[in-house]
Figure: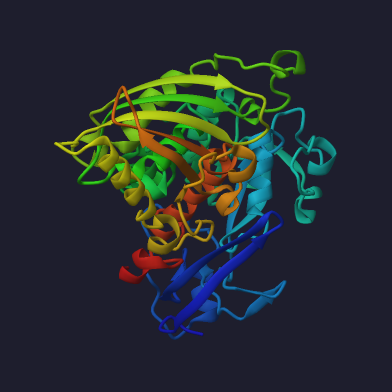
Length: 456
């Protein structure tokens, strides 16, 4: 197989928790740095120029033929998967990273980072595993390392997924970016930095270009990308069809959340605090929803940086006795209501949701992308976290109960899985998008599929 060969493959892979599929129509190509591999495997072809910031010792990555079948499902992984690390691997978000990355067609976990007290121990011996599926067999015996990018365990890593606590995340993530790693963070520390995007591929994929302005990217190819607060993710995805609609838009937004206890991490709230109770306070949560949403829905311009969206958001956040899945009650004023009745606006909001394209899967070809980024459920008592949080394997936000609002224009309810699309899964989608865009050190644009790759 050479550089001129084309592939047209139905890309899919199966996690223990379900199946994700992505249609890939792209060109088989060498990616990565080319030194040894091109000499040994491709002697007759001229060496390609590695991308800016690529690590010279990075293993080359090549698209494989779509001919390996596992569990009856056809797969087309990278022949040499991109080596990745998970930081905070023993925590609740870190565990979800490890779970979701099992069997990923592009990424292979080669290093696990945690605290000094966990370093040197095997993962299965140290982690208090709380996921619904067993520890992946290839992870159980991995020796945990301290979160130090200079350690040998992280030498060949290109992508770092950070599930670190906010107390430690900032400096550690910056250190890994300084070592030329692409860091995808679940922590809040860098979210409001002027050159760091709060990225959601189905909402603001163009914001990823901001990493080119980061000093670490210019000096060595490393960078930091964040995902949003979990409740903000569900809200900005679920309302994106309305906000982006040329005939609707949002002027004012009131949101009251009912947030699952898993959002507090493990062990989280004590039973005495949450059983038979609703806690109407989650530290700094309301402020994060109100500020992060403006950055996510705003514009990015290379010369001006991030320009926040011009709307008013007011949030009230509550912790409820639900394991997974954040539910949010929303009332909004449409920016361009004109002379339309509220009933007409309701119909247009539903139509906008139902017609919203699958950006992460169909447009960008991201392997973790769901069939629908946003789904509408017309049942009068939906969405519900127990019934709807796992739609699209936890990557889909469900919207329902769209109806006229007596105070503003329209009110609705939305629900999203807080530890998948709202946390680890969101970071994985971000890394997949960065891979397609050629921003990961050692990977050239066009890996993967979808419309973006077809145009590359």
